[in-house]
Length: 504
Image (cartoon, rainbow, N blue to C red; front, top):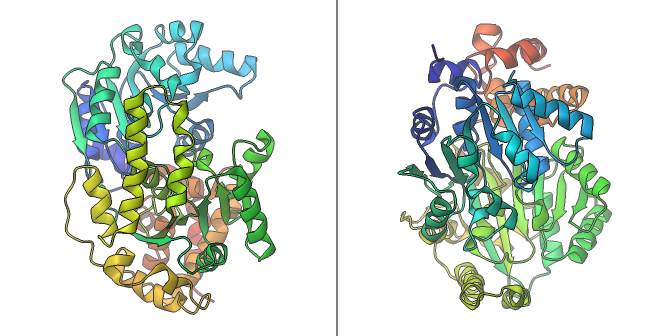
């Protein structure tokens, strides 16, 4: 007899209810239907296949684009008691062979694999494995009309037939209607169930500022970073040179920052990403190479020093902020010069129609940023959704320009914290805030001891609820969102010790 969906939701993941769309997608998956889900970053896409992995009889195979992302998700699943693994190029031959043998024997509930790995014998071997579902994460990468097309994703076409015709779940956060139709065609999906979530994320405060409008962009970025002292953030730059220069400059001005781009030695890239994941540094200055590899839910700000190439890229990158649902800020610096820089890369696109479409996409983002329309309304409109103006979650609706926020470096911090309270409904007391910081310190200590990112232990939102509710025993602790029996057995007593001490 299969486990009940709600029993798994509460008992394994520690949640009492689903986010919008999760139950619909899970029901389709459990019924053996193909399904496509367009859900914004932070909308809980991972749960739509992780929960079924505990219920379905075979192994759920997840095709995911980045090794770092796979590692983080496997760490989190293992911490929840799942039999999970990743198979990628970082494994030595003996370990790779052992994992493949375990997969063939049905020893895993869920396995992550990079599309690049679907070469020769491995593709044939997968046909011998007891798979129950194929998940294509970041599915927009399969479409040439998508903003992040990856040729390796073309290997997925026709894969399902070699796997015994199992159902397919395609997940993306940024597909337009054209891209969604292409995903269905490329993956050979049949009469799929579908869900499209709202792209409106009211916990994100969006602001845009034209470069060259009288300000010093570098110093403004420093001021915005200082608004979030001690919190995690990402600053995106278009070029590797800009990444290294800005990271070094921020470091000289007291910011705990590190660079990340594809030109760095692999060991340095890995070390910097690990330091960010484990809260050893606050800020990563990065090119888009850092984009989809982030599974960190407590990123409190994202700053674009340069304009991304299109709306989808902007949404994908700013979507790294506030994935835990807590208030976070996103700032876009843009200029027409950024549009012209993006045009330099279009000559490599052989198809003239696609080349023209990519140029129009850059111009569209420039015009969107330069307008005085509600930022959220403009974004969701791009994806075919209509909402009223957000009323206060962007610079246009709030009547607060980015230059107002950075003026006098830090004098606006108090004003911003009143604004955050109004947006989030947060009424955290000083006592709860003090307890939260102690819980946060304990979380890092426990995570470091296990060699995992801090958020794998508990999200910020879970720690905040603990600090506000102050559970004093096991039964009360299990009522906190994000605390299930497995998590409690592993960490509960340590957190209860602090909660029972209260505030000194």
